[in-house]
Image (tube, rainbow, N blue to C red; front, side):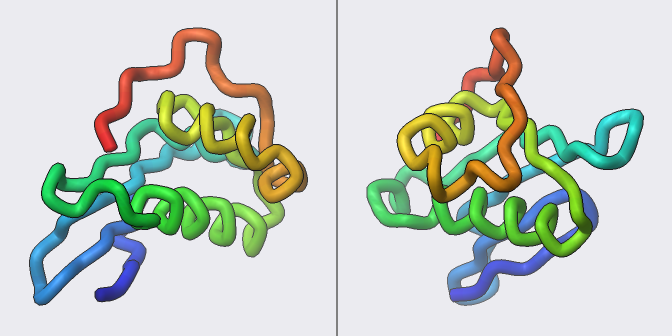
Length: 102
């Protein structure tokens, strides 16, 4: 099991199969990454995979001196639930956060 960055997404693999991903897009000013999608295959849900993927995006943003805007509904809830953990990278989530299947 490993999380890897591939372009504008982090993927979670098990035995070479992608079972989860978090997708982010830089905004116009490049200082904010919009976290647009978090997905984990249904058979693997209920673990910490989705949160690990969000954490990977946040760690990447920290390394770049950027912030994360949780446009994905799952990430928005996670940012609110663990506010202290994400306070250093969080910007306000979109009021129309996309539905996000985890």
